[in-house]
Amino acid sequence: MKRFAGFLALAGLAACSTPGIDYAARVVPENRAAVETRTVDVGRFSGPGGRWYEGRFADMLASATFDGRPWFRMARYTDGTVPEGERAGIYEGLIEVTEYTAEEYTQTVRKCVEWDGLFDCEHRDDVEEICLRENVEVAVTPRLIEYGSGQVLFQQTYFGESSNESCEESYWHSRRGRHSGGSYVYGLLGGVQPPRDMVLDALSDTIYEVRADIAPMNTTRRAVFIEEAVDPVVRADPRFEQAVDAGPKSPDFSCYVWEDLKAEYPEAPAVTHNLGACLEAQGNYVGAHGAYAEAAKLSAAMNGTGQPGEKYSEALSRMSWYRSGLQLIDRLTAPDEGWQPVPQPEAPEAGEAGS
Image (tube, rainbow, N blue to C red; front, top):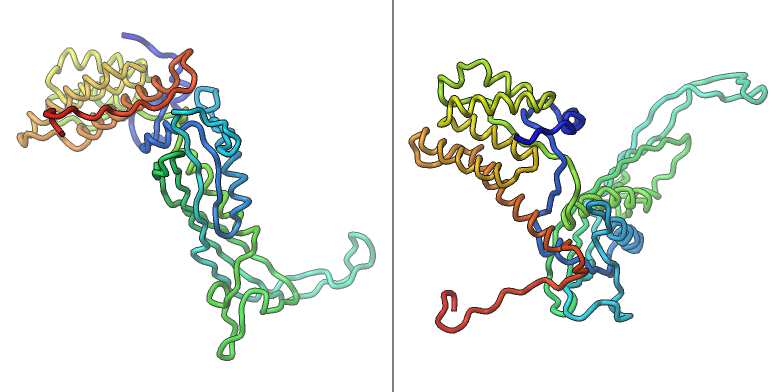
């Protein structure tokens, strides 16, 4: 079995609440159409802070890398830089301020009210300040429109928030609200828009979230162990718990034990699954997929329902999805092929299934 010394450095990155082994992963997001659309432009984001967001969005696309290389190619449709037959798209969207609240309160602080010289306070006194607590919530909905067809390939809403508190000795109500019924109404209810810097701060929170949903990432993920064996004989074997506990800090030792347990308990679904987690962490995704499938089958047979336990089916589905993502990456980054159009499925001929 292939061993891995480098994973010890990664083991400390994840919390110990979920047992398993951390490893360097290449993760493809769910929306494959967005991942495939690597030639992109940035159009208009309408709403408050839209021009600012357009610039930051373009910067995000231009700086997005995968395996150390740029993922997107920035192009302007108007200057004819989009190659014919290549999938390309333009990102545009809508920005909304969904909430802006402001509330006033007072506080008493002790301040220097008379100075005898620089850094020399002659007299301090209690001073009442009028303070304002503000909160802004925004919603950004970027969408990716395919060049040529006009089809929306990606659309999702992201939320950001920003808060601020400020205090002054003097304060004028009208800058945050309006007088109504003998009192002041603040924020959006008072017909006042939030400060621009707070809107931009809230918007900035959404940029990285969008990045994670439209391009593959190099990250760290955990191959998760099953913590408890269903078979009472396996559960009573002290090596099972030892191997589970050793996973994050001593993956080599843990996987040695899973090998031994698999030889001794070949029909134990938890043991087979956890050996599969070792294979996943080592980069043997075909072997891991097979082990997860075997573990799911053993689980279904053991629980008497004909269906595998939830954790077993989740692991099998996740590995299937992960491997399909790696195949997509291999296709999109094939050496010496450059930027390739996305192959379109052929229409079935008359008489074939689906016609």
